[in-house]
Image (cartoon, rainbow, N blue to C red; front, side):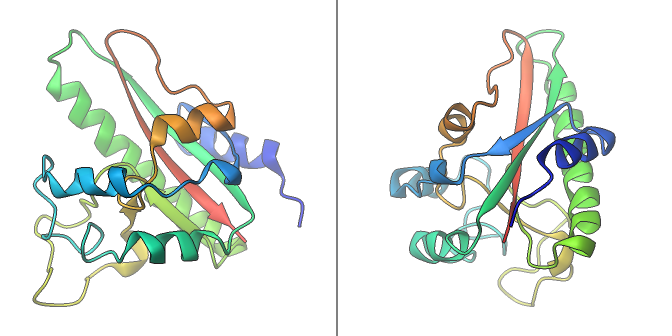
Length: 180
Protein backbone atom coordinates (compact mmCIF):
# COMPACT_ATOMS: atom_id res chain seq x y z
CA UNK A 1 0.00 0.00 0.00
CA UNK A 2 1.49 3.36 -0.97
CA UNK A 3 1.43 5.95 1.78
CA UNK A 4 1.01 9.71 1.28
CA UNK A 5 4.41 10.69 2.70
CA UNK A 6 4.17 14.41 1.91
CA UNK A 7 0.69 14.65 3.43
CA UNK A 8 1.80 12.78 6.55
CA UNK A 9 4.84 15.04 6.97
CA UNK A 10 2.69 18.15 6.50
CA UNK A 11 0.18 16.74 9.00
CA UNK A 12 2.98 16.19 11.53
CA UNK A 13 4.19 19.77 11.13
CA UNK A 14 0.61 21.05 11.53
CA UNK A 15 0.34 19.01 14.75
CA UNK A 16 3.24 20.79 16.42
CA UNK A 17 6.32 18.82 15.39
CA UNK A 18 9.43 20.69 14.24
CA UNK A 19 10.52 18.07 11.72
CA UNK A 20 9.22 14.84 10.20
CA UNK A 21 10.39 12.38 7.60
CA UNK A 22 9.80 8.92 6.25
CA UNK A 23 11.27 6.16 8.39
CA UNK A 24 13.28 3.50 6.59
CA UNK A 25 11.73 0.34 8.08
CA UNK A 26 14.96 -1.53 7.29
CA UNK A 27 16.59 0.74 9.91
CA UNK A 28 14.50 -0.90 12.62
CA UNK A 29 17.22 -3.05 14.16
CA UNK A 30 16.27 -4.22 17.64
CA UNK A 31 19.42 -4.18 19.74
CA UNK A 32 19.62 -5.92 23.12
CA UNK A 33 22.35 -3.49 24.21
CA UNK A 34 19.97 -0.53 23.76
CA UNK A 35 17.29 -2.33 25.76
CA UNK A 36 19.89 -3.12 28.44
CA UNK A 37 20.50 0.62 28.87
CA UNK A 38 16.97 0.80 30.24
CA UNK A 39 18.11 -1.52 33.03
CA UNK A 40 20.52 1.18 34.23
CA UNK A 41 17.31 3.02 35.26
CA UNK A 42 18.64 6.55 34.69
CA UNK A 43 15.09 7.72 33.99
CA UNK A 44 13.79 5.98 37.13
CA UNK A 45 11.04 4.18 35.19
CA UNK A 46 12.53 0.70 34.73
CA UNK A 47 10.20 -1.79 36.38
CA UNK A 48 7.83 1.03 37.38
CA UNK A 49 5.88 1.75 34.19
CA UNK A 50 3.65 -0.37 31.94
CA UNK A 51 5.36 1.01 28.83
CA UNK A 52 8.95 0.42 29.99
CA UNK A 53 10.93 -2.80 30.38
CA UNK A 54 10.30 -5.34 31.60
CA UNK A 55 6.51 -4.72 31.48
CA UNK A 56 6.48 -3.71 27.80
CA UNK A 57 7.61 -7.18 26.71
CA UNK A 58 10.80 -8.69 25.39
CA UNK A 59 12.93 -7.31 22.61
CA UNK A 60 11.93 -10.37 20.56
CA UNK A 61 8.27 -9.46 21.01
CA UNK A 62 9.06 -5.88 20.00
CA UNK A 63 10.79 -7.04 16.80
CA UNK A 64 7.93 -9.43 16.01
CA UNK A 65 5.34 -6.68 16.50
CA UNK A 66 7.22 -4.13 14.38
CA UNK A 67 7.79 -6.66 11.58
CA UNK A 68 4.06 -6.50 10.82
CA UNK A 69 4.41 -2.89 9.63
CA UNK A 70 5.56 -1.74 6.20
CA UNK A 71 5.79 2.04 6.56
CA UNK A 72 7.04 4.48 9.15
CA UNK A 73 7.12 8.19 9.91
CA UNK A 74 9.66 9.85 12.20
CA UNK A 75 8.56 12.99 14.06
CA UNK A 76 10.69 15.40 16.06
CA UNK A 77 10.33 18.36 18.38
CA UNK A 78 13.44 20.52 18.66
CA UNK A 79 13.99 23.02 21.46
CA UNK A 80 16.59 25.79 21.65
CA UNK A 81 18.39 25.84 25.01
CA UNK A 82 19.77 28.96 26.71
CA UNK A 83 22.74 26.88 27.85
CA UNK A 84 23.66 23.22 28.28
CA UNK A 85 21.90 23.11 31.67
CA UNK A 86 18.57 24.63 30.59
CA UNK A 87 16.49 21.82 32.10
CA UNK A 88 13.35 23.97 32.05
CA UNK A 89 13.39 24.12 28.24
CA UNK A 90 14.34 20.43 28.01
CA UNK A 91 11.32 19.49 30.12
CA UNK A 92 8.99 21.91 28.32
CA UNK A 93 10.08 20.61 24.91
CA UNK A 94 9.60 17.01 26.06
CA UNK A 95 6.07 17.75 27.28
CA UNK A 96 5.22 19.54 24.02
CA UNK A 97 6.55 16.57 22.06
CA UNK A 98 4.52 14.07 24.11
CA UNK A 99 1.33 16.13 23.70
CA UNK A 100 1.84 16.42 19.93
CA UNK A 101 2.62 12.70 19.74
CA UNK A 102 -0.62 11.68 21.49
CA UNK A 103 -2.71 14.21 19.55
CA UNK A 104 -1.37 12.99 16.21
CA UNK A 105 -1.70 9.34 17.26
CA UNK A 106 -5.41 9.88 17.99
CA UNK A 107 -5.91 11.45 14.56
CA UNK A 108 -3.90 8.83 12.67
CA UNK A 109 -5.82 6.00 14.37
CA UNK A 110 -8.96 7.18 12.59
CA UNK A 111 -7.41 6.32 9.23
CA UNK A 112 -4.86 3.70 10.34
CA UNK A 113 -6.46 1.80 13.25
CA UNK A 114 -3.56 -0.66 13.54
CA UNK A 115 -0.93 2.08 13.96
CA UNK A 116 2.00 1.47 16.29
CA UNK A 117 3.47 4.53 17.95
CA UNK A 118 6.85 4.59 19.66
CA UNK A 119 7.48 7.67 21.76
CA UNK A 120 10.47 9.50 23.16
CA UNK A 121 11.35 8.50 26.70
CA UNK A 122 9.10 6.93 29.26
CA UNK A 123 5.35 7.28 29.09
CA UNK A 124 4.38 10.12 31.41
CA UNK A 125 0.63 10.11 30.75
CA UNK A 126 -0.10 9.61 34.46
CA UNK A 127 1.44 11.29 37.48
CA UNK A 128 2.01 7.80 38.91
CA UNK A 129 1.77 4.67 36.78
CA UNK A 130 -0.45 1.86 38.06
CA UNK A 131 2.26 -0.73 37.34
CA UNK A 132 2.30 -3.46 38.57
CA UNK A 133 -0.81 -3.32 40.78
CA UNK A 134 -3.53 -2.43 38.27
CA UNK A 135 -4.00 -2.25 34.49
CA UNK A 136 -2.95 0.83 32.55
CA UNK A 137 -5.61 3.54 32.93
CA UNK A 138 -5.05 5.00 29.46
CA UNK A 139 -3.91 2.23 27.08
CA UNK A 140 -5.01 4.27 24.05
CA UNK A 141 -2.87 7.26 25.08
CA UNK A 142 0.21 5.49 26.39
CA UNK A 143 3.21 4.21 24.47
CA UNK A 144 6.61 2.61 24.79
CA UNK A 145 9.66 4.52 23.65
CA UNK A 146 11.80 3.71 20.65
CA UNK A 147 14.57 2.85 23.14
CA UNK A 148 12.29 0.48 25.06
CA UNK A 149 11.85 -1.34 21.76
CA UNK A 150 15.64 -1.59 21.55
CA UNK A 151 16.11 0.97 18.78
CA UNK A 152 19.18 3.17 18.55
CA UNK A 153 17.32 6.36 17.68
CA UNK A 154 20.21 8.32 16.15
CA UNK A 155 20.99 5.35 13.88
CA UNK A 156 17.35 4.99 12.81
CA UNK A 157 17.34 8.69 11.91
CA UNK A 158 20.65 8.45 10.05
CA UNK A 159 19.52 5.43 7.99
CA UNK A 160 16.25 7.22 7.24
CA UNK A 161 17.89 10.46 6.09
CA UNK A 162 16.36 12.44 8.96
CA UNK A 163 18.51 14.86 10.91
CA UNK A 164 19.17 13.88 14.52
CA UNK A 165 21.68 16.38 15.89
CA UNK A 166 20.60 20.01 15.58
CA UNK A 167 23.80 21.50 16.95
CA UNK A 168 24.92 22.96 20.25
CA UNK A 169 22.35 24.07 22.79
CA UNK A 170 19.46 22.20 21.20
CA UNK A 171 17.40 19.25 22.38
CA UNK A 172 15.55 17.00 19.95
CA UNK A 173 12.88 14.49 20.94
CA UNK A 174 12.25 11.82 18.31
CA UNK A 175 9.32 9.41 18.02
CA UNK A 176 7.81 7.34 15.25
CA UNK A 177 4.58 5.90 13.93
CA UNK A 178 4.47 2.58 12.09
CA UNK A 179 1.65 1.83 9.66
CA UNK A 180 0.61 -1.53 8.17
